Length: 82
Picture 1: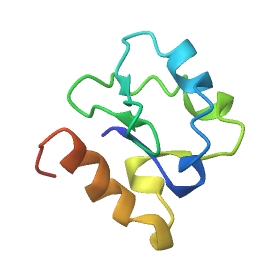
Picture 2: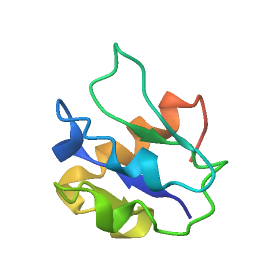
Picture 3: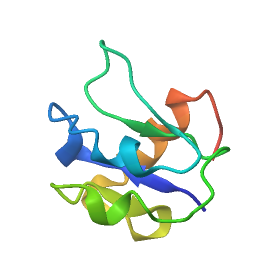
Picture 4: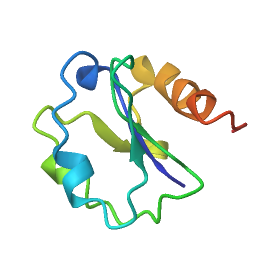
């Protein structure tokens, strides 16, 4: 399991999640519209979830149905298969 950053992060990129991640597995570039969590590096500690000011972070199995596209988007960002 990993955590997924969903659509409410798009355009916001607050960065609170990056500050609390103990393994530095949350990435973005200046050209990206949101942050992404590397599923191969995430240790499932959930530290990022409660600090997100827009509640954009979910455990993969808890991503709302209307935001499931962000699961694939996250994996593709790291060139990974689900």
